[in-house]
Image 1: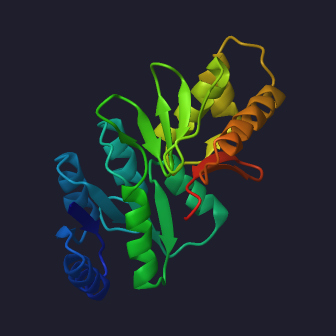
Image 2 (image 1 turned 60 degrees about the horizontal axis):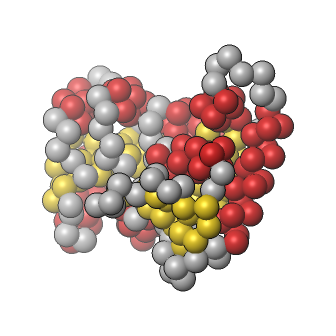
Length: 227
């Protein structure tokens, strides 16, 4: 797996490169935001590990640029900031996950493994996330561990698809309402909560460990049961 590390702290950058290479990642290291942006724009990486505070360009700017270019590589953001607003800003910029410094090496590696297991298109066009699969042709939700499946309603399907495609991001009620019901709809936010409840029941019915977590005061996020 080809991994880009963008980290301006020399000692940390060197240590992370050594650790990641021992784990068989093919690592390129950039020590500033300008070179990091250029590397990201190449679109050649399977993973991006991105510090927030960088000279030249911030991690937020780089993540936003990656997503504007349609780059789908998972982004793990490293930050010395632990405030909720900073984490939300990182996720809204396009990051899939974040890790607050200082952190344990084993947690970093576990987060990368988890990101690697997330939404992957199958040869038949279905989406997978954690232990679930979603078929766009039939709207069937299937648990990969036990084979149990159930058909979703149109709204349930679009909610789960939106969460899966935006894996690692917290989606607000406003985003979900606009996405599912449209800009011109008069649907209220309680409609989101009702259909979110229906979708959760379907996940429980098939015995999935993957779950929809409510982030208080923000919105919803899809999480693997083992993360």
